[in-house]
Structures are given as C-alpha cells and as structure tokens.
Image 1 (cartoon, helix red, strand yellow):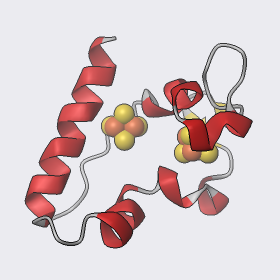
Image 2 (image 1 turned 180 degrees about the vertical axis):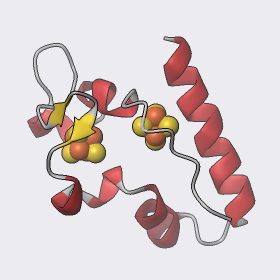
Image 3 (image 1 turned 90 degrees about the horizontal axis):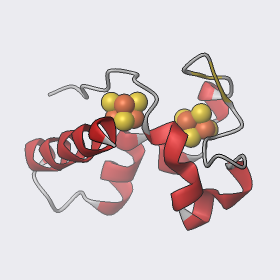
Image 4 (image 1 turned 120 degrees about the vertical axis):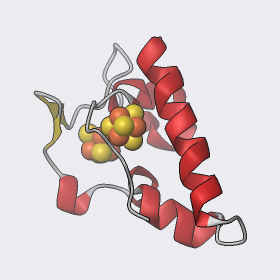
Length: 81
Ligand code: SF4
Ligand code: SF4
C-alpha cells in the first residue's frame, strides 16, 4: 500500500512540539523550511520527516496497514487543531 500524505503541511507547522526538531522551529512552532506549504529541503529533509523511513526503522514489527492507519489518524488530529 502507498502512503496517503495529502501534503497539507500541518505536521511541518508543529515541529516546535517535537524535541528532536527544535532546531528547525520558528517562533510560531512551524518549520523554517516550510514555504507555501512546500518543504524547501525535501530531498535532504531529516529522516524523522519521512514516514516511510520511520516505519522501516522503528515500526517494522507492526503491520504496515496498521502503521499507516495510525499515522492518518495523527494527521487528522493535526488537521482539526
Ligand atoms: S499532516 Fe500528514 S497529511 Fe499533512 S503533510 Fe503531514 S504527513 Fe502529510
Ligand atoms: S524539514 Fe521539511 S518535511 Fe521536515 S518539518 Fe521541515 S518543512 Fe516539513
């Protein structure tokens, strides 16, 4: 199955809440590399920004469908904030 990221950019607007992304956050908590909803360093973005990478490295023991369903739920939560 493929990843269903809608490129809404909401996760990139909350990096201030992620300790390992502190160096990326502007004062409003959004990522300094997000411009017009596009990641300007996409090819060199940190691994944590890459959902497929996160799955491969940390959640491989969880069924892929389950992992992506949980991720979609998290995206939906962000959308409602
Ligand atoms: S919040 Fe989810 S759907 Fe939106 S850009 Fe981030 S990963 Fe993609
Ligand atoms: S580096 Fe790119 S993908 Fe990662 S939070 Fe910043 S804008 Fe989003």
